[in-house]
Length: 488
Ligand code: MN
Image 1 (cartoon, rainbow, N blue to C red):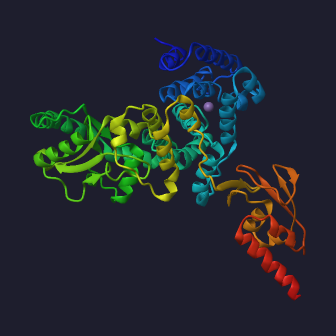
Image 2 (tube, rainbow, N blue to C red; image 1 turned 90 degrees about the vertical axis):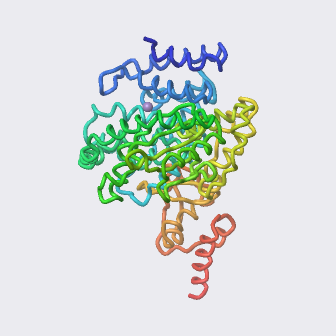
């Protein structure tokens, strides 16, 4: 059997130089040495974990430095090895990625902060600055979730809740539904144990039976398509994942019979024309269920997902869900944003370029931006620099000393922050500490910083603040307070 290290090298072989392989091998040694005293809770050597993460990352074709950073990702945090050593032993980019991962891991999710989930996800994105950091983070969490069982129940639940509420939605947002679904199913039993058991019980043998039934339909579909000169590349089945079944059960009065897409047939056609052709044939074979046809090819989902979905009354009147897509769309559904780069780096992919232009809603603007960029990749250097994304060009996310996340416009100062906490805190601001260090009041805040405002009773704002504050809301509050002073 090939070792993890051999598999990683094999995945990279055609895309990297010998020198880069040497650097990777150096990283293997470095990680093995640094983690040599540590074991995972399961008893296996710790280093297997970063190697497994690196193996998945090596499949995503994100470049050698992302793979090396995956190998080293827990070293600064767990082995107290300074970042400067990573920088001198490897290179700036590896140390930048490891530093980003260490920082993202330091943001702690507070369970009781239900309203803050979206902010928290945004904060992770804002802190990451480079998409490779998020991708490594997601793969890291996936491996941790797979090896969660030896942990104490409270720790297990906490990790699982964070996975369910923060990381899985992040994966979906980046179009990586496969990783998102895996994360959800791994976390589900630890967060909602009873519901998990109930869902499994309700499903029972149903999805197995449905799969067997669909299997019988495959030759019928194949024959009809072939007879019309359409050649599917693959026909497979997609079983709906457990957590999404549970969510749907709640909407459908816990009635499993109303969930028609428990198992779906997935037809992979070589091109767009083939997809629509196959759809026509399927609708001729079996009557479509009204209202169930969705053209996500012409109108992709906000995260970029593309496919044709339909449901038909198949043999014996049973309702069957069918998905039709090209191999590219299939890969994108799995790898999401990462797949775009794989395709984007191939200049001659005409099929991809031919696809309809995608107009995402405003809050997904960065996906659109990435798509624009991926069209322009010609060299691997450009490709890599495009992974550095300022997710929120105009927003920053900072923390109060209690850990509450405050969302501010880029360029906001300590005074803007103070007025966001409370008008009185703003009016009485006398000084500020950022990450425990005293700063001047016109200090421009950066994502991830912890801000503490020092107040002085019966103090009034200074008109000089108007020269540096960023938000018009802050300016208005200062002016109101100053007017009040004049009228006294
Ligand atoms: Mn890790």
